[in-house]
Length: 113
Length: 114
Image (tube, rainbow over all chains, first blue to last red; front, side, top):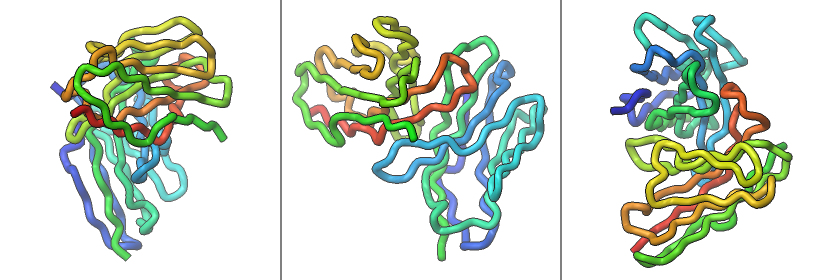
């Protein structure tokens, strides 16, 4: 049973619009969340993170929102650019785990020019 | 910038072969990881190493072993390759053991076992 779920395998958005990528989790011990972005033929790269003591973290065009009661987080990209087209992985870490990240299955974002 | 290099981009092996996947990082990171990426399953941790000659099992260690003889190098070994080990293998490193440390990934090795 997957503890971190990204239920949308793909998303297509017009350039300049907002992209919203969603992630749900089941383990209430998760207290730190990260997003990684992966281009074809490259490894994933860290994008943004959020601690459970916050409900929002912003870095330029990227904002991550955390709703602990719903066990849901989302990544907002505003405005979306064609270079944002990639696979986005949500990952979570539990307070009782020293190193382990649990990854979701990823969402492929396509930003159309 | 941290560079994590995986020796092969593509590998094709036969069932029963012993397979070595090599990974080298150049930033003196303490921790190194091997993940596999499968469609619909995301990234799953196979093994983790927090120091030379030290290793810990991840979520799916069966059929794999690892070796870390030098700090910069972490090898994944498939003792007897099977078709269900066909996958994208990703190596990663992080500076220290903290779970909030971001991972730096290599570009991956696509392994096909026939």
